[in-house]
Length: 246
Image (cartoon, rainbow, N blue to C red; front, top):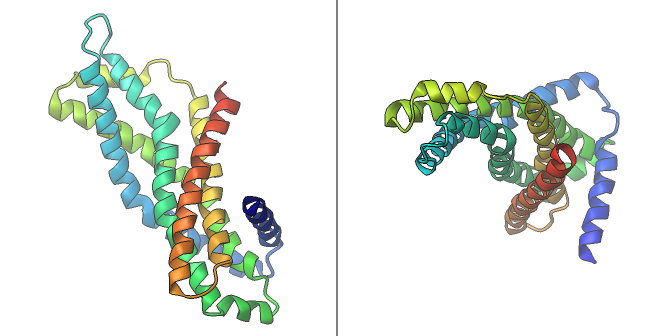
């Protein structure tokens, strides 16, 4: 029954988070700051992961499609659709859940145990909205751009793999990228990214906001935040796939 307790308290926290900001100017500055902290600072790891994912998908597909009856341009098509449908949204989301989620949980948890959140409440500030809402809005706004960058970089990584390994010709790879492109796949990937961004920020914020004790408890809250965020990302990945692609 403890899970229902946490679910209820999570939604109660969200009801406090999504309230009108007291000072719009300060709120907008906080959103821009969080977009930089949560999104721009993660751009490097997203690019590195995407390049290697695109290269590995291309090479594995090329080496497993050695049947002469199967056209080689399907390697490019597979790399393109794999990056758009799954890797650039879900896998990058899991990476960000570890990087961003642990950071959010530890930051807010440290503020809780050092009584900074209590000080905000005493001053009449809605601490939940003040601390958490800019993070959620910032991630929801910036993460789709990370996904788009990841898609392009991953496809380019596959192209580099064809150039340096000769698994297939670059012309066949490029033809496969253009072959039977379905624009709705981009919409699907961006919808998943927005949902994952909400999970990546709100779940760790919940664990950090209600942490108690000392540094050990903050570390435990950070770990639980990453675990639950990752599980929810995988769960909603299945649900959204069934709803949007079935």
